[in-house]
Each structure stands twice: as structure tokens, then as C-alpha cells.
Image 1: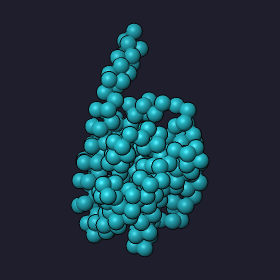
Image 2 (image 1 turned 180 degrees about the vertical axis):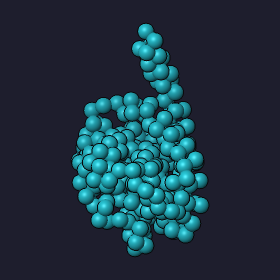
Image 3 (image 1 turned 60 degrees about the horizontal axis):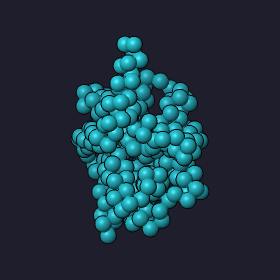
Image 4 (image 1 turned 60 degrees about the vertical axis):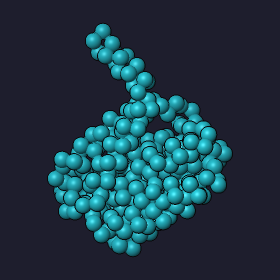
Length: 259
């Protein structure tokens, strides 16, 4: 019952701005499961809410299938590779860098006039975006994943000129494909916890439905503050968890720069 309620909150947040991992990962690890099991199960429960949001946004005509469909293959391949790397490499290395990226994204969403319900001029073509931007974010999504939807959304707004409603909708599709590919790799290795994942997933369906409804009804008035809060929350959470390692990393970096 507790995981089901947590899933509702996670689904509401994920459908609006991404970042449900901030909620689901600690909840799963609280019950004593390993980090890899928590990441794998978080991706599993996320798929329920993502499919709910995608269906809702697609029916509203917000998903630009012709533009996004060619990007999905790259998202899938990179997401799968990222999950494979997770089994080989310590994810804490990436966890030191991602908070900085999320803080930059939060500042962008706070100050940029492009973050609105109006379209703006794209800065790169969908082809370039699909070949060079999507695989990088998808690789991270498969490898660690926390905050990947926020990074996708920021990229869609900044580089493709999408308004926040359209960016939110299309982000869900890209994030779902890379996450599903990673989930497949981790499931084959036996890291997915079925019962906790189903409990969270059931809640995700409810939360995602209402979250998507708020996006459709309120647009930037709802999305902008939520994504700023979520991205800053993710950043603080990751920095707090890895503070000691970050200090060591910065010390080595300063020694390298200044000799």
C-alpha cells in the first residue's frame, strides 16, 4: 500500500516534469534492495506511468510522431548500451556530474523566454538532434537515469524550439524508449523486483493520468515551476548523497589544473 501511494506521487511528478526517480529510488532502497535492483525496478514502474502519459498526450495531438519516430532507434540502442555499462561501471562517477547539468537546466527553465506555451525557432535540425543529442541523453538514461526526462525536455525546448506542452509530450516518448531498452537489459540479468515494481506501477498509472491532465490544462503555468522544483530537488539529493566524493573529485581537478 505504501509503494502504491508513492507510485501515485511519482507518476504525477513524472508526467509533469520527469524526475520520478527522486521518489521511487529512495523508496525501493529503503526496503533494503541494492542500487542496481532499485534502478532496474524504478525503470520498470516508470513504464506504467510513461505509457499512460504517452497515450494521453497522443490523443491530444501533442506528440510529433513524424519528427520523433526516426529518433527512437538511436534512443533504444543507446539506452540498452547504458544499462550494460551500468553492470560494468560504478554509477557514482556519473552521479557527480549530473547535478551540475540539472542545475544548469533549472536555471535555464527559470530565466529563458523560450520556456513558454509558444513555439520558438529551432537551433538545430531534428536530424542532428536525433543523431547527436538523443543518444547522449539515452545513454545516460540507461546507465543511471535520474533526471533524464528533465534533460530531454530542456534539449527539446532549447534546441528544437518546442513549447513546453509539446516538449513534455515528446520527452515522454523518447524517455520511455531509452528506459524500456535499459529495462530489458537489466531484466535479463534478473535485477527487476516484480512485486514492488507492480505496486509502484499501479500508482504510476493514476498519478500519470492526472499529471498529464494538468499539463494539457495549464501548460507552462504548471510545467515551469514543477520542473524547476524537480530539477533542483534532484540536484540537491544527488549532491548530498555524493558530497564526499564530489569534494575529492574537485580537489583532484584543482590539483590537475593548477599543478
